[in-house]
Length: 262
Image 1 (tube, one colour):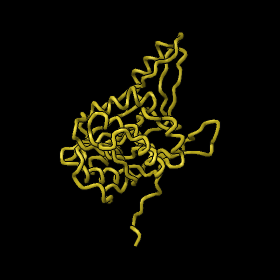
Image 2 (image 1 turned 180 degrees about the horizontal axis):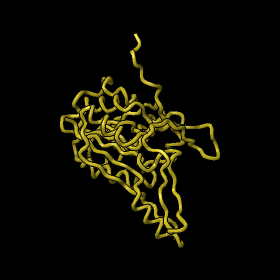
Image 3 (image 1 turned 180 degrees about the vertical axis):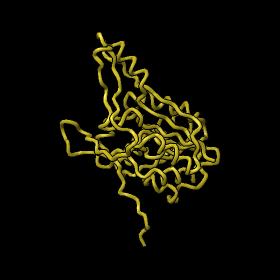
């Protein structure tokens, strides 16, 4: 018998796995190396023996960094190709395990036991999933009481797909962020090969911040810390440098939400 409320089709990146792996390689892009991975390790406080779950791990770039810090990592992703690439790039076979699975059905995976993880992460992936609640519920089931879930995403308040942009105020010589819509949830196809393959897209789901906080809370995951990370890339030299750099430092690129299992 089919469930009364079946989940939507997964929006995984299996069809762009090779392209994505080529972009990240072993160490990730500069925003991984300069911002994401240092921030994740700081907020998780990874130690030897800690058991961590990486939800939608992709080709394992964050998993490898967590394993290098001494923790044991289990990466789960819906993409068979990305899991194969993660296994191929594995550096610490005694501390890295990769499993194919839908993030929305984590609680149904036989290899993942309830209460068996000290912490979990979902890095730059939650905005490619819908709905949210099954992800949080499965994660809460797998976390120990008091364990943490760290979710990192492109900042939903300032980076709304197709509804936000940088603008230049000529009169005040200032760059600002224009936000056309924010509270409306939207599904947006994103072209992965601009100018080359406009037919190859992935899906992103914009939601306001309240959607994340409230669904986490309903699943028994209470936000106990939030960081807003700026871009590490300085603007080019020129007469607008000071204004552009100020806006870079004031308007964050990423949002990190850490919640605690209660």
